[in-house]
Image (cartoon, rainbow, N blue to C red):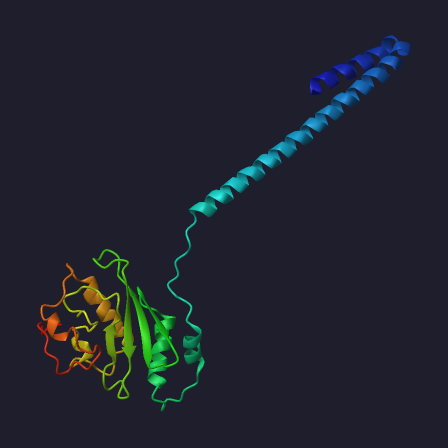
Length: 241
């Protein structure tokens, strides 16, 4: 297009020198033609620009759609506490309050939750429901269980009562079908420096270390018992649990 304009300008310059009268008419005609060509060129450039912008916009839309389809929701280690749990967290308790220690443990559990564990509390701060998810690369991977943790009046001198809630009770050699757990930390090996969180971690650990799923050999002796009773005088088939 620029070459054609240069030819037109050259013809006009020659016409001015050789035939001024004819040149005047030619100048008008060729000048108009040049304007048409220039206008057409601008129009094509604008259309080309619009087409390019439209193409880029469509590519951007497609890219966003692809990302939207492929994006996975981000996993968060911290779950938002329930309204009842929040209420317990903001309550101001004195150090002499029997629930002071339990509230402190609850805050620590929620602020820095251990992997695969979360906690919810209802109206009674002394009863927790701990959700446990089987750790990766274990035979319980992805399986979801719930522990009921209740704190006795003598806590922390005495351990909390902890057992699995039905219907999802893990099949494990130290877990009875009524939900009870053969764990010395819930009896003679309990220390006041321990916490409900450390107990939950220990239970998750015994599940994670299991190589096979099987119920305790003396399960029949305990299956009908009320779960969560103090374990100091209990007799299990395995003294090392």
